[in-house]
Image (cartoon, rainbow, N blue to C red):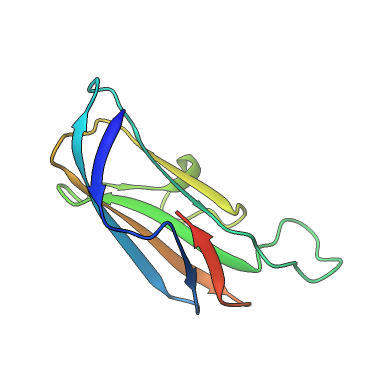
Length: 121
């Protein structure tokens, strides 16, 4: 089990491109010392234009989790700072947790064509 302390809503909405929402929480204790922090962002994307080829997001939200202790950023789906621009479910896994360390999960709307865009974290 992982115990965190924080104050954030489980669901909210992005209203325009470049909106940013940050949620800060503290690791209170870890049960085994091998625990992971998993943060998942998901949203239901509006329908794309018919006959669009390939995978296309209408609204693109991005997730990153940053350690407030040393500034280490962890990106979703084992990616990098370029972000995940094809999935509506993004998962960040942070390992090597330290009790007392604070993390900030940030959701940003890199593209928002149809808004508002509800999302859950």
